[in-house]
Image 1 (cartoon, rainbow, N blue to C red):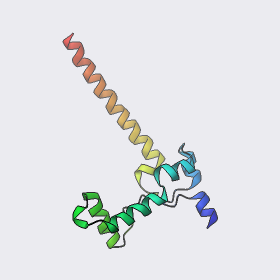
Image 2 (cartoon, rainbow, N blue to C red):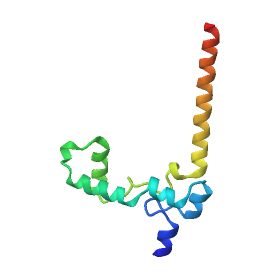
Image 3 (cartoon, one colour):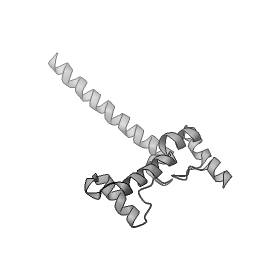
Image 4 (cartoon, helix red, strand yellow):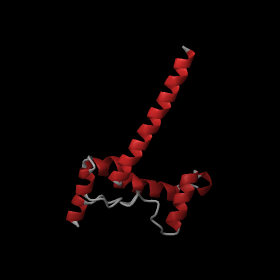
Amino acid sequence: IDSDKKNNCFICGITRSDIEKAGDSFDGHCFRHHFLWNYVFFVHSLKKKDPTDYTGLEYYISGKLDAEEVTWVPSATDAEFNPSDAIEASTAHAQASLESIAARQSELELLF
């Protein structure tokens, strides 16, 4: 158990070595992205909240909790936590930004 706590993110299950290979610190990942007590507090507050006051996301997660499903919790298979997918998404976003900047620059050149 101690080895798991020291080497695996409790929330998503990603190993320390995979997190560090992706350029993040394991402790930083666990405290910034997947702080266990934030999840505990969220579930507790959701159970105490009047369901008629739920936001759409709270309604969705409440349904998952009632069905005892954990699919709303991030996992190691999510694209957000896959380093190669994250790099690919970041590259695509940067490319789209560059294309947008180039288009605006062309529009400005036509004006001046």
